[in-house]
Length: 144
Length: 144
Image 1 (cartoon, rainbow over the protein chains, first blue to last red):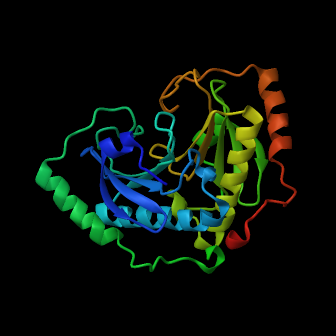
Image 2: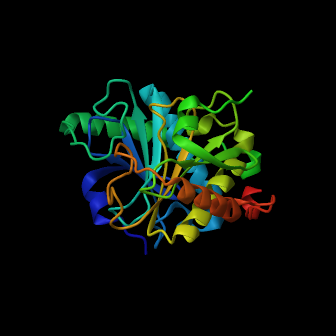
């Protein structure tokens, strides 16, 4: 049984579940920062996901990446699977803008900025709309 | 015409070219740190690569990731596409070990450690052997 690692549960709010991945919002108002967690047991590195689900994983990363990029009008998207501290595979997808709190450095390691409660709730509802797929992910034929 | 960004050329040594990506070794002996650069013009974000080449990109990332993991007996692999500073898409694939220079933090931003010339040359020759594919990448049927 897949269970979300407690550290990821503490540091994020749930946005929605795609077919393979949970989409989570980091509790850090400095950046629009989403995390994808494949709902599979015993995955730590990216390629621990079963090969039969690689195409789906790629498509969900792509979907969230492109939707967040458009929604935030991001100047640059950052994608990373690090996981040195939390031993459950999770993929960071972060919208970056010139002049954001860490720009142009990576976001990891800096202090978080709290969301106000209403701001977080509004953002999560917007993200749900932007990210919902109704199983209509645009999968190119060579990845289907 | 694709041309490697001068900053990437300065900071790395070439290892080999796969079908889509150049594989480069970072000039930082702290970590076995490879960089993949798709040889396509005008790509900055991961999904700027033409969709028809996404399956190949995924397979090359997978190939380098798995080969470097085995070769270095890595405890954890880090994968990232950041590119806030260098505006040419490049994907970091880094083998991490407990107690390495940045562990458990990400590697970016710390000072580099020089390779000695012979050590770098030997490592590059070993990596060429480990990474050569002879066009036999193991592509699962659902990604072919």
